[in-house]
Length: 96
Image (cartoon, one colour):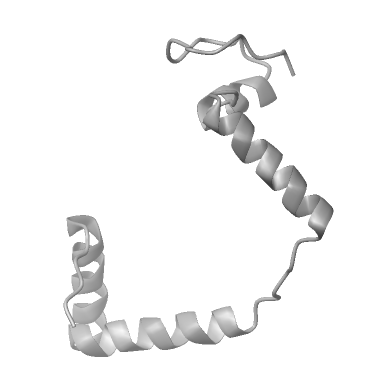
């Protein structure tokens, strides 16, 4: 198996590996064991039909370009003035 990782993550792995005197393979195996154990304990949620309809409505709005970016939403939450981040090709969004 071959896995590509960003350089920053490789540097983190090397630091931990040297500190713990382990091989990369040992460290990655242990990380995957911990991850698999953790996801097994997560609850599984099945959305209702109504929730699925609402999700699809939201996706349709996004396809039309009617959405806020995370930066726009964060500024709104913090009460900062709205700055347009890009030109819109659809009708203006209603203010939240």
